[in-house]
Image (cartoon, rainbow, N blue to C red; front, top):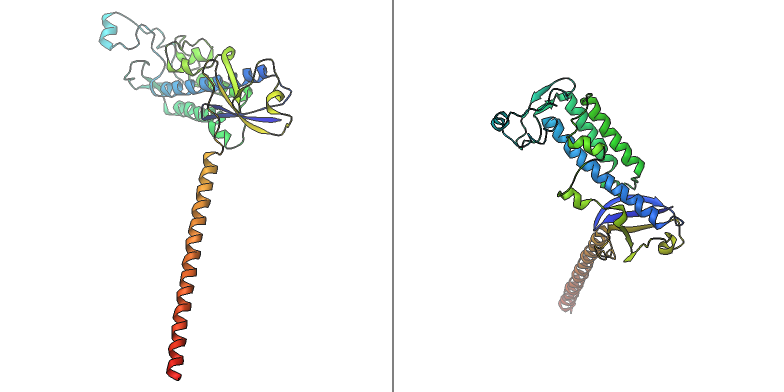
Length: 282
């Protein structure tokens, strides 16, 4: 198997295994789905953190309004009493006015927080250093884990306008958000290796050679973004090790020179003593 270290710019994303006979189109599609899936998990985790603090989202026509404005406009949150967390709630006002303030009890909060930690760990960038892969299956398992935790805390479900529910149903609207700029359309995705684009219609072996047991760095980006910067000749860790070796060598040379100088001084002093002793005898 060929192991791909997938990067976005200079930022490591995840490890992915393939083989030389695999079609570039299939690999690009799979990697892009994993990349976008990790972004989805990140968005959902953030929103579930807010859910644990401030409860479900307010309807769009109430969101951002003060209590006085809601009363004046005679608006009502019809979902507040339908979507109640298991075990009851305490009021914790959302200062930005997105959520209704009905915070789940501590036990349910812990369920949500623990699940967030687990989901993030399953798709973390730190897995690259641990030589662990991220696959579509793992991404889906993390999403199912998050969905299950939300169902436990909110057995009646979330309001249809809650962004968490929309994310799970793949109906989220990210128009005009930073998140929309991060997502890569599968049709516009590109993979680059060693300054060359992995072209559609080709096989991986056309770019990586014939060695199945190899590990290479590939860069994922949107079509039209230009040629990505090539990887440096040595990694940051390798550069630090080289500098450390040079420093140690320099210190060793200093010690050697110092020892040699001291030896020479001792030799000169010994010669003087012998010369004076001979004069006295004579």
